[in-house]
Length: 138
Image 1 (tube, rainbow, N blue to C red):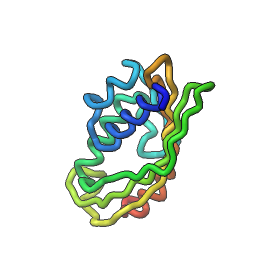
Image 2 (tube, rainbow, N blue to C red):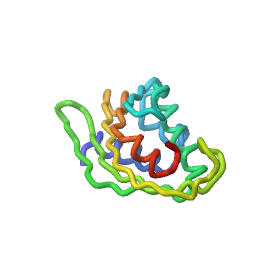
Image 3 (cartoon, helix red, strand yellow):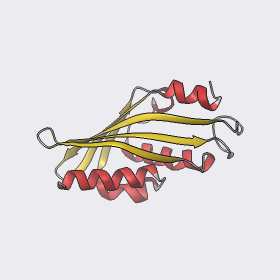
Image 4 (cartoon, helix red, strand yellow):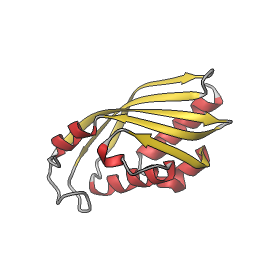
């Protein structure tokens, strides 16, 4: 397993289990950027803020979990793509609405770009509107 693959795997696990920036920062450059063409994430521009968003999400969706479907490294372009399925139920306080008790199972992809041995940018590819409807938020 290549170094960037190992780093991406460790970052992915830390991010998806809600460890926030404290658990993810060691795998990223200090100024790592973030982008997504998804409404709930439109204002998030740093990877630090995204990891904190994930941490917050798991406070009102405490059964949140992921399943990795594919993990691929492109050494030439210095990026790693992770395809996962996230599943959770909105049962806790603190989300965009009071708890709906509804669940989602939603596909997403992270494309993690590397500078040296650390993630410098990540794109999340996600059909947010589908998940929002399933959760009763839209």
